[in-house]
Length: 295
Length: 328
Image (tube, rainbow over all chains, first blue to last red; front, side, top):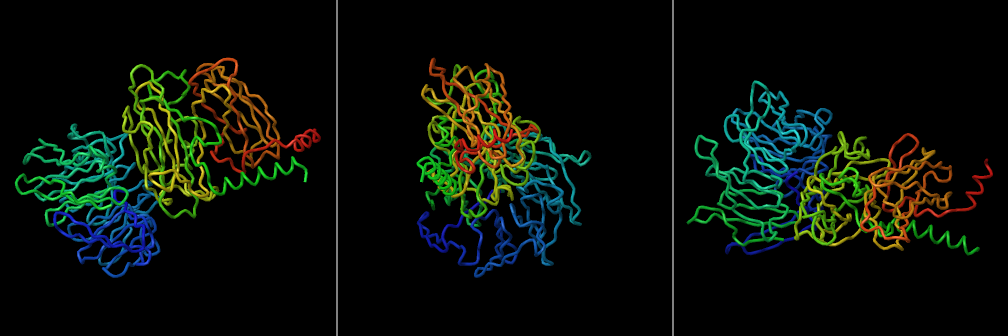
């Protein structure tokens, strides 16, 4: 449940200055047809529609109106905790009680309901084989094959809860837990995910999200220890973890998630309606805080 | 109207008002007159008053509550003036918030022993605290939470969240308080909300004139109760007040030991709260005394202590007592 953004008012419009660029915010709420104030996941499909996951169903936004879907429309559950867009443009929904729904041009398809895996789906990623990987908080991983077969994969992380997963290459994944970051390998023979490397320089803080940077690095968002960039030397697991933004003054407390835009910007959103924008500086090639904040 | 009856009616109405408005939604509550909850590090000596280094509280949000709320912890670090120091401060305590299916209904969650599946449900938030002045004598806020993230209970007509304070390492005592709030920066109670626990581990006041009290709720199935206290350290006496009990004394525990007292429950006491009073030793000062308390029904099932007593603070009613005697 990385994304939790609360819309307080029915409509609000805020302007603020970021790096000399005017950013325009419009806030949508009840009057616009978004009748739930807690949003847990958001993603855009190949046709440009925004899909928004709440505790009381799924909303599709076309820029004008919100359309509401629930379990009566064949969602596995109403409570949506994760939305992922796969390489072909299909959407995958992870739910609070372990349900999984696939959204395609044919509509909704339930892969598993609430009775099998009673644990929140925390993160979704796609491997280059076309398999979709779902991390659950207490039930390890679930893998969906292109024919929609679903298998469960256990991990070696007995006492750790998984909050995020990102595919690296082949059978390797980055896995973030309550307080650790790992490179893990899927062992087909045993059907388990095994720890390959623990990124020991990563501090004791929940891994909130892992985003792939276009130059091949990974943004690691910690809950309250700042933001890191993880890079690997080509074809190896030799890594470098660099802190790109510390949280010394508390401005990055309670990070909920982030997104990378296609204009070299990196937006981070925190609990309590705070947003900070980072921009890539040409000379160093690193992302640095631009000074723009929205509260 | 007779003055005594008038007094009783006023008290009852006041208690109902407090319950309905959800005032004093902290743990410990103001009315309980308990300074702090306490959880020791996992390497602590149990003779310091914590039998299991773990404290579990449940937060009930009414079904009708549809705006965000927060769970706040005062002084979550283990260091500074408030906490109990044993040598150098070396203690870490993790506070974790759980919701979703099973977080309350799982039998292990209600057990007084932190074993099995007591960390049931979905982990919504968690933070590890050590000796850090950033959090010393300050409020740390978990949330915002959506009521729907909790586990719904028909019985309580609300959503339940669980907070576990677990001593991970070290041997010091972490003293802290909770508040369930509608505001992330201030303590503003949730109308109709309540907080409860099945084992209450707390610090007693150092004031010898102090009387603390906690309020278990006796449901309609209770025929008798067993009241257990741990590590009382000869710090005065413990007595029980209810609509039918005027102050029955409990056996008090010795260092690192449990003591239990069994009491019958009358028909009139069912569906009411009981008051367990902790009256300090006035002859000698027992400083920094920590104690754990449990109450069980005739089946050995733990009963909840509510910070806002259900039905209000019980007042002994002599008429009920006489009636009970007549039945014999």
